[in-house]
Figure 1 (cartoon, helix red, strand yellow):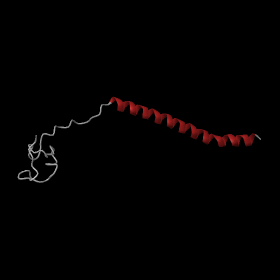
Figure 2 (cartoon, helix red, strand yellow):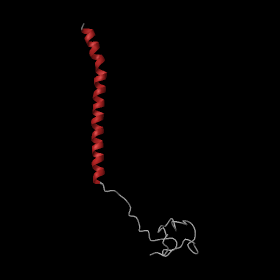
Figure 3 (spheres, helix red, strand yellow):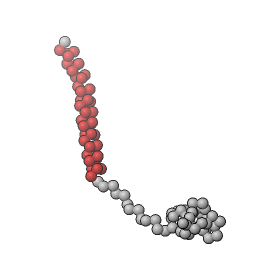
Figure 4 (cartoon, one colour):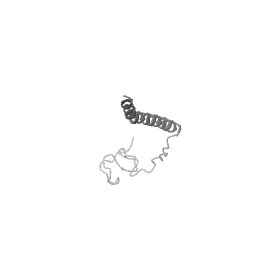
Length: 91
């Protein structure tokens, strides 16, 4: 009877140790997550300032000018502004 009880107790040791290790890992994980959230909230977002888009391509007096460094015109994005049939003076 004593041998059976001893074998039963020895058989319970690995699951008990496993549950303890899992619990400790969860505690450490929660603590690390809490610290990461705390650090992220204290660190300002490092967003580089965007330079003002002052390099317009094309004729800025045209109504359809896209006012972008990437597109010249809303109607004719890549074409030249000189002699464009869609040119209209800005109001």
